[in-house]
Image (cartoon, rainbow, N blue to C red; front, side):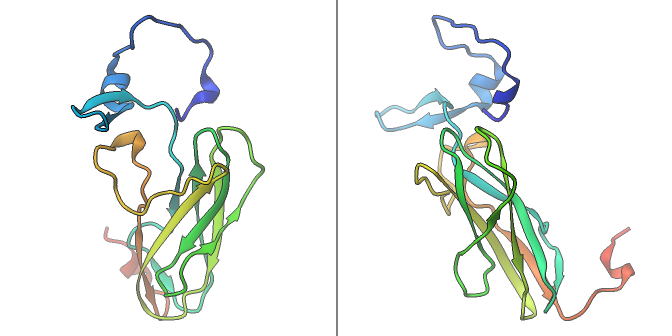
Length: 170
């Protein structure tokens, strides 16, 4: 799913192939027909994730900060990434970077200047060309590669830069 650019050949088989990845990681539980059953993942779900800042980062009040990450989807291209900084202003549009390429990750960024000191929860969500929106909450029975819900990043905004000694544990 994530590496279609590296496919070199396809072999058609009569029965579902139950190798490790297909039977352990590239599957989800289907419960719509009564008894739960494993079904293979067939299409990527829409998803965006924050790469920076990292969980627990300290940002400086009044200074612009670049929030950035990647977004991806299945058959439909990423059309929008929205960012919520937890400052009460709701969802705002991020800027998609690079040109769109089929089945490729799409990098994005959002410039944020935190005005107040405190803890903030940063979130992002992707919307693809088919109108699929990344879900807010974890879905039961979806793990591993089907985990496309929003992953929040908590940051602390401080009034001034920390000293070198305070930035590192070692």
